[in-house]
Amino acid sequence: IAREGLLSDGEKVIVALSGGADSVALLSVMTALGYRCVAAHCDYHLRGEESERDRMHAEEMARRHGAEYVEKHFDASTYCAERGVSLEMGCRDLRYEWFSFLSKRNGGAPVAVGHHNDDNIETLFLNMLRGTGLTGMTGMKPRHGLVVRPMLDVTRREVLGYLADKGLTYVTDSTNLLNDVKRNRLRNVLLPAIRAYFPDAQTTLTRSVRNLSGNLALYSELIERCGAAYRGHGGSIDVARMSADMSNAQMMLYEMLRGYGFNAGQCEEMIAGAASTEALRFYAGDHVGLLHRGTLVVRSKSGDAAPGEESYLMEPDDPSTWPEGFMIERIAPGDVVYDRSGLTLFLDADKLGGRRLVARRWRMADKIAPFGMSGTRLVSDLFSDAHYSPIDKEEAWIVTAGGQIVWVVGLRTSRHMTLGKHSSRALRISFSKP
Image (cartoon, rainbow, N blue to C red; front, side):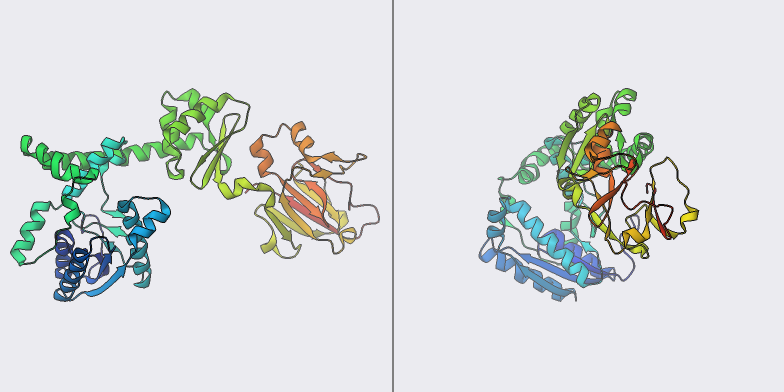
């Protein structure tokens, strides 16, 4: 606890208490160390009388240790059936959702769970058997969000020895003795065999996990530094240049996108598609990656589904209504200075009148009546003339007055509501990329 800075002295802590050996030892130690404990027991109603036995024992252990006791009853079978998940995963989701609620109710108190060193070794093997990288080989972390694991340095044997010394009883979940899930097969069959042939396996495997944790910390730091060279405006990634520069660009891209959920296969396809002129999309969870001409932009799926629906009703005298990057000023016509940047629009305030001024994203059928020309042009044609990429198009802003397009930001202004020699009031609308 001290080494990892997990808890403050006397802090209130939610202790996950199943009634088993690990959770009873955790509650005993935490109360002995002076923490204000709330013992939280989950009853999934999966094992009949055994579930009731566990609940009663947990309540007794909380009372014995002077801890506040709370319990939650779940219909785990129905929950898992409705969502198509395994009992193991469903019960995990249910308890951590409840633990999060308890934490909020108790002022953000951390949630302590009884994972110990043997559990960490099991996690290492499980991750390796599934196929993993450095992160998976570092096992469980002492802290993960609200969850703290004070006993990761402690072995199962030490837990049982502590309970015997204190005269504390515990219950055993009979399903843990069945070898019907991977973790149980590891715990009950494979790891005992490894320890029989390699008596110091516990020590050496723990040392490996710690060494790999140090490797991961260094690796993550170097990824961050190296990745900065390929990041551009708005968090875009220059995949084409990365592919040309690096022999292991796929792994580099995978690490840069880790937080979004893209898998290694998708990253391989992104590297392969970096030279394509076609716009490619890759979906992962709540995010989508848009790759065009070697540049990748990641955004939320909701933003990708309807980019043209983002719009803002702009009040000239209320900056809080302006999208980021926009500025509106009231000026005298004599102060107008035109430039060729395409990033400034001047309007006749009298012609504008009470028309609604809106900044929004581009839509497919948009047309503008360009200044200095007759007729209208599709905004999409302006984009083509300017060689806009799909990313550029989706990020483009349109300004309308009374529903009429008066500005394609960065490209063209319209001939409507422009200033003339008789204009007495002017609006200057400017844009700069955030």
